[in-house]
Image 1 (cartoon, helix red, strand yellow):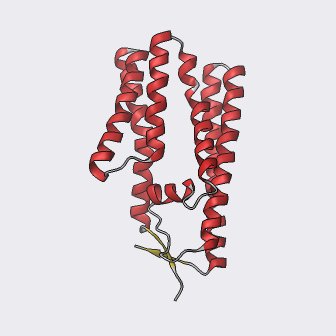
Image 2: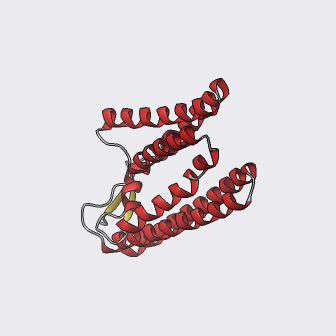
Image 3: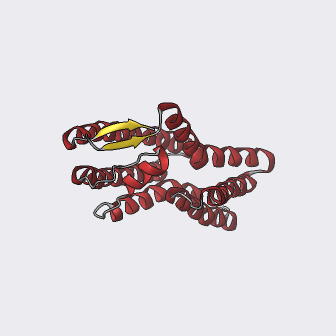
Length: 210
């Protein structure tokens, strides 16, 4: 009998992905927009920061741990918000976008050669993937090389955002950053899924929904 890679059932997987997107981006951005509408720029920044830390605290109480990306987001937002309020310069906050991608690239690259690459950790945290109990060299190699792929994607995003921040007005920067992020994330996800499917086939592993 082949070993299995376990995934949640499709509806549970969709719910997990939706919640992870909401807690990492949707809820903080909604709090930022509401705060800015009610009390101005600084109030919006503080509201987004408070929402991020509240989500991290709830995660810690409910599950005993906080996802790595949420930790980075909370720390970066704290530093960026403090600098913006202290200096009054909005462009400092916008540095969060390329800086966050540089940090992600470093995190992915640092873990890529180890026994527990970041892509494997995120696959477990974000989509609930569970690797087989028996060590699979092919699957580990996929997660290591896939981690390098995502490090490259985030580094490319950081370069694109830095160029846009230096050369374009703020509306064009925000639009260009959103388009570039969506395009590269979708492309990276598509490549990763097809790549994983091929690795599972060549490694003799089957997918089981649980």
